[in-house]
Length: 439
Image (cartoon, rainbow, N blue to C red):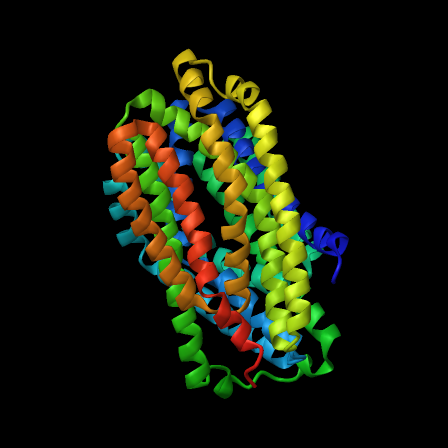
């Protein structure tokens, strides 16, 4: 790779793939909004939230797969690439099947936690009982995306994501607008798109593996596929990534909840500014995903020089991108805020705290990049430790600073939080370098 342009070419399809996700949410809202009312829209939002939480903790199916695949690919162990994909695929199918079997337990708990009317809860149930049947396909697709990233096949990742979201949008329009299926139509369109994309993704990956090595066509040695030591290491990695992910989720939830204590206006303003942060993450994640692949591949090949060179260039690109995004929101954020809300109070609050959101975007790139480094190296324990430490740091600073400075102090603590995430991961960087000397 070894050039800024080559890295950007790898990252750009991922950025486009990430950017296609919000379009799906907008299309779902538009489809149900033209056929139903506020209750249907609310039910779709809450139903999607339930599945986000349900799937969130299993992000290791994507991240863990990427690191292990990239390392095996860098070491030219193509048969092991297939075995890694099969291991994670079996886990994904098992977890997805368990979700289906426990649907009568999961839904009541979810509805209990949702603070909404009984009529909306009934609509959420209608949505849930259809969409839950896509769980195995969704979780398996996480693993397929991890394989594609680990192999550096970002264009195919883009194609798969566009297929998933494009087909989902098309089916939702057919089922809701033309056939009048309501919230169940949204769920059915999503399930069919998930299963079709899973099948296409499996075909894509299998073709790539066959191209890499004819040996990939041989029969699977199921007895050795789940060899005890390898499986135990993989599950330990997955557990640490799950804890790390939940810690990050808790950090954002704490920010939202703390902001709510300052009133509805500030809560709404913070929500708008977080949309800017999320949009920026689509871009920065593109470089982080490429870093995952590069680090894993170079580690597998024991090429420390390439590791240092490519990481430096990727960091430079991410830093410039973060600076551009921060400046765009700093100078254009007020215009975007006016487009997102007509409430003058919310507009005023959001404008006041906009500079803090821009600063957060600017400094956040380093945490993204180092996340990519440790995912690629499969050093999940270090990621877990860094996330827990940064969350506790955030809790301390947010409590202290928001007590004295209100929402401004909360944003300052949020900036400290993402900075500490990066610094605490940097503390473990010598362990990454030592991996290149191991045999």
